[in-house]
Length: 204
Image (cartoon, rainbow, N blue to C red; front, side, top):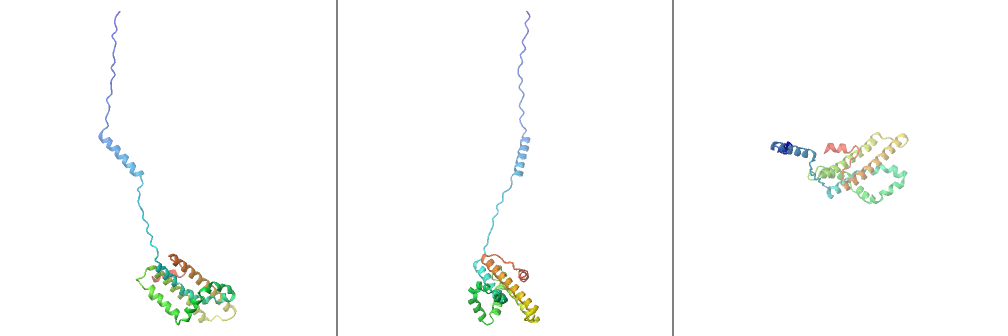
């Protein structure tokens, strides 16, 4: 028999391809770029809080007593019709009596606030602004009395009703502004009074 030669197959090994250095650098650059895009930068925010000093709050609160004392006269009709409304004002009657017993107390207090606080640049803006609001409010309260004396609406009829309505409305307005300004000053907040704050901002 003829012998068939056996064919031997030797396995061929394929050479491994090493990555090119440039491709590695390109891949690393893409990974770093994607990481920068998806990573949100963290910034530290520092909040500063500067509270109003106690002296500035005290000056601001005391300043609103000027228009309040001068505006209590507009409540005479309400006090006559509803005597119980005068009960909350009983604790301040001694102070009010002392204020009215001093000659030219309103005149002196007005200029003391305006020249000593409003125009005093050594003080902070907070007490100066509140004192200016109190001064502007006090000036506005004088205008209805001047109008009443000029036109003299009368002691009866429509003129008297108009006077009562005007006095009652002004009294409620003054008391509301006083309470709002007093509480805001004690808390260190800036009160914004209607018709008063705009005029005060023009003068600051």
